[in-house]
Structure formats: C-alpha cells, structure tokens
Length: 189
Image 1 (spheres, helix red, strand yellow):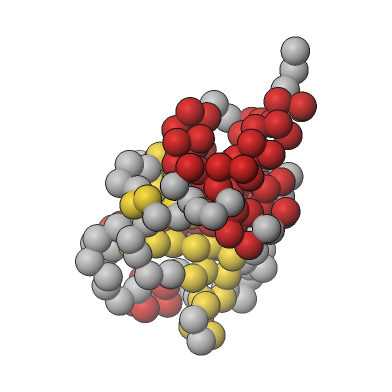
Image 2 (tube, one colour; image 1 turned 120 degrees about the vertical axis):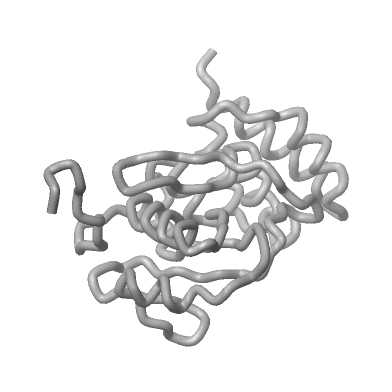
C-alpha cells in the first residue's frame, strides 16, 4: 500500500455513534445510496451525547435501493428490520422516506466531515422540529428534552419552528409555547 493511501476505517468496539453513522453514510454514498441521519441519533450528536440513542435512523433521499451489500461489507448483520454490528451497541434502521418533520418534507441537509467521511444529517433546526413532532403528537417529554438540548447548543431558526408548529395540529402551537418558555428559562442572560 502506498504511504498516501490510508486503510479504510472500520467499526471497532470504541467507535463513537457519530463515527459509525459517518462510516455508514459514506459507504452507502459510495455505492450510490443517498441517506440522511435523523431521529434520536441526530439529537444525540447535536447534544454532544447528553442524550444517547442506540439506533441510527437513515432515511433515503432518492430512490430506495438495497443496502444489504454495503451493510454486510461494513460487518453488519440483518436482524429483522435492524442492522446490528458485533463490535457496536448501536444498530441501524432505514425508515421509508421522504425525509420529513411532521407534515413538512425536508430537502436541505447538513454535512459533517471527519476522518471517517461525510455524514449527511438534519440541520439543528430540523432536528429540533423532528424531536418536537413526537412531543406535539405523543406528549413524549423525553423528545421535548432532546429538542431543548439541541437548541441550547446550536443556533436554530425559532421563527421557522414557530410557523411550522402552527400547522402541527392539534397541539403544535400550544406545545411550541411550552418549548419556547423552557428554552428561554435556561438561556444565559
């Protein structure tokens, strides 16, 4: 092997959630499969693991293609709807697209680059919206906390979230006010 060429990174027991997500996203992209990380794993990454999620939800952004070859090449094994790796506590899932938060389809995504490759992920604003969807519709207070953890660490478009919340019936508008109040309570003055 030439000195300029580095060996491909592999999943190890000490690989972080973000490293694994980045490897999966990068290898899928190399095989022509475009995906976006969403859900609890995106919140965990943006909250710097204040909240920890063990599932990596990758949603396809284009035509759905078989991921089997890529996932097996990374060392994952399929167990029903999840992909598990013998050296990792994290599992991967591929929910059907499109990428959406509540009723709004999302087309613009963040990209985080590292030595493991490129991770396509919801922007912090859309990550907050994704977590709030569960709070608005299922009263999942853990998802409210996750939304707050992300919003406290990253710039978000609060006006956009408020506009979107108004369309998330029946509780979006009122629960957005709870979110805003909790966010303002913990902001530095």
